[in-house]
Length: 130
Image 1 (cartoon, rainbow, N blue to C red):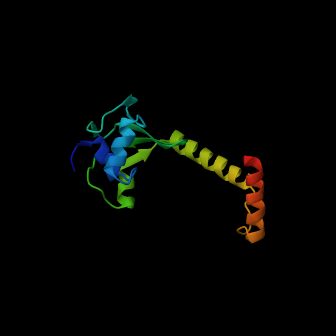
Image 2 (tube, rainbow, N blue to C red):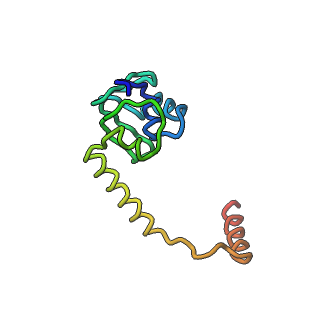
Image 3 (cartoon, rainbow, N blue to C red):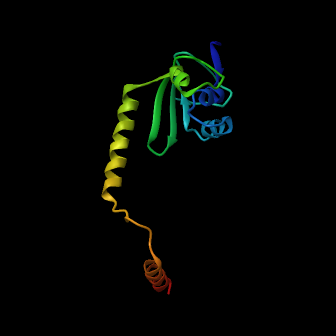
């Protein structure tokens, strides 16, 4: 394997993003940092570099590059390209607990609305618009 790889190719190969254009867009928008600094998609990364990856609001990864690969491989092999820090794992677990607690607080209906329910919903919406 090579000792360095392009940042966008590595993010794609490590399966953080489904395509390279998505990885490039994330890098350009500042959602990926290398060693605490913003980077360009063509930046060369090597083993030992620390990456901060923000995929969604709250879904953040702090990883250390273990292998600088630029070829996409299976997910089980791709997980050997990096090591996630303990703080990052703890943050994601806390976020997961918050999400499950928030989901438990919402009362979802057991069934879809029938014709009578839809008529009542339309009446409420129509009444609010006026």
